[in-house]
Length: 198
Ligand code: GAR
Image 1: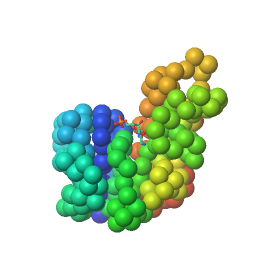
Image 2: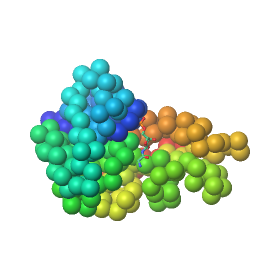
Image 3: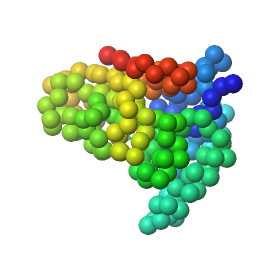
Image 4: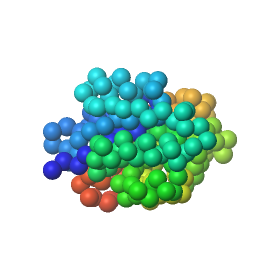
């Protein structure tokens, strides 16, 4: 039986596309849902074009009511019955209560070499810190923001003329290699770490 994968996005969904494309006939998992908190997320149309069910749980009507948003999110996920949830550019912070319901089943990709540079503006902060390398991490999601066990990392060199934007652009193709490679192992219960160098 293939594992059922739900993918949560907020924007363009390029990591989601990389994950879905990798889930071919021989893959241990299959995509069953793409969910966005943002009705305008470009990734929704891309998912629909690939024949994946999509749904939106808009966070905006729940302003000041995070528990209400997360209850709706949880219901939408329960309806899809996923074995694995991949956060792929999902830009809402989830509470420990919500994460506890899915802990051990939820993965996230973060655009830095964790545990460095948790949170936002990771490319700019890597440059400001004078890093010689930059990268991305896929980790299991725990209550600590960007702090769960590391499942894989990809590393690229920082160039002297890099800006946050072109560093992000050079990193993204590595994210697209790393996340599918980690998901394949995770869905096969293989807990060896993935390491990629550009
Ligand atoms: C990716 O770079 C991902 O690592 C980052 O958002 C981008 C989403 O792009 N995630 C975070 O910053 C999470 N804190 P995509 O929508 O094209 O996959």
